[in-house]
Amino acid sequence: QVQLVESGGGLVQAGGSLRLSCAASGRTISTYTMGWFRQAPGKEREFVAGIAWSGGMPYYADSVKGRFTISRDNVKNTVFLQMNSLKSEDTAVYYCAASRYSGGLVRRPGDYTDWGQGTQVTVSS
Image (cartoon, rainbow, N blue to C red; front, side):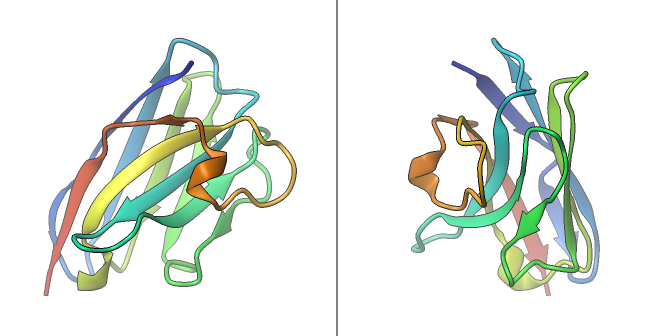
């Protein structure tokens, strides 16, 4: 099992930027697909971005494509989400997650086995 702890959330004005970090412990994440999800009040948890174990071929939800960038540092056992040009609709709790699936685009929450506790991102308009 992988323990995940997110950080970097906060309050930012529309158009601003934040960088989320996800520190993993317990096991190396070098063989895991890693993902970021978010959940706004009253809404279901939705996929934001994913990245394969090698760091190649990151993929994104259409709503964040071109604004968010996912990356990973397997040596530091950490995953990042750089969020630029933030909008009020990006306001949510953001979760980091780990999946053992290594093939294809892993977008479904049910395909991820380990989750962090989440970090709040609030974008004021």
